Each structure stands twice: as structure tokens, then as C-alpha cells.
Image (cartoon, rainbow, N blue to C red; front, side, top):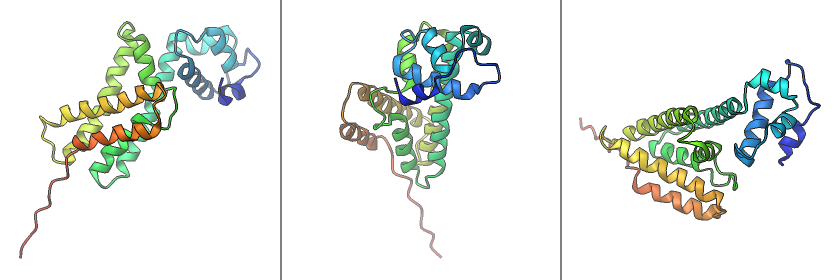
Length: 206
């Protein structure tokens, strides 16, 4: 168990005024390390410092907690994506930054909580599948808009977006198997074939 989870342990049965945001981040970490099915309600309650009755009162169910945890994780990642894109003046660099955030080659063998949850539970979990589609769509829209800044046509940009996201998520999956970071970075460089150069600026003559 991670140091974060160990530090978060507290006597069971905390009052309703406890820090729900901190408890949710503990759940993110536990689901990320162990997966949904393996993580028991007792393990969640203990790590979050809650009795079962308090757990149900605050989060409703184990599945509702998973949905909240996955959404928190995905929202944090999307915020990072938008910030990194906004900080880049060169759209090509912005695309590379997006791929770097998604692949997270130095993130260790836990992989990506979002991808892990989808792989474990979808398509049988309609709620998770719906959120996964919505999150993938918003990430794709950001990538698509960045590619359009590079001159990609409306018809071409979605295909490039799909290929780039597939590459980044594939690298994330390989990371779970222990592929070294250097090798994963090498794989990400293959994205350069899909990232067009920005359109040339026309010179103005007086």
C-alpha cells in the first residue's frame, strides 16, 4: 500500500464534516493500485477512515465512489492537458505535450486509472462507458482543435486525432507491463509522422 494511503488512515466512523475531497483522493489511489473488483468495501472504508454506515451516507455505494474517483482523475488530467496546450506557442509542441501527459512514461506500472477502469469494467458498465466516451470526446476535441491550428483539414484532423490518442494510450498500456521509459519515449516519437508542420506564413511584399 502507498505511503499516501497509509498516512490517510484514521479512526473509523468519522463525522460527516470530514474532508470528502481528501477521502476521494485516497479512493483514487486505492482503485488505481488494485482495480475495482479486488478493492473491497472494507479496504476502502478503512483507508478513508469511515465506518460502513458513514461510507454509504457519504458516497452511496462502491460503484458510485468509483465513478467519482474516475471523474476526479480524468478531470485532473484534462486540466493538465488544457494548461499544457495553452502554454505552448507552437501547435506541434502542444500536440507533443498532450501525448506526454496522456502517456506519462515515468508514471510507473500502475498505468492510467481511466484506462484501467474502462478495460476492467466496460462495456458491461453503462455509466462508466458513458463517462469514458464523454471524456475521450473532450480530449479528442482538444487534440482535433490543435491539429486544425496546424492546417489539418476538417476531414483529416479526426483520423489523425484518433491515431495519436491510440498511440498514447497504447504506450500507457505498455508501461503497465514494465517497458522501460526510454523505450516508451522512443515509441512516442512515432507520433511525429502524424503531426503536420504548421502552414507556411506568406511573405508580404511592399
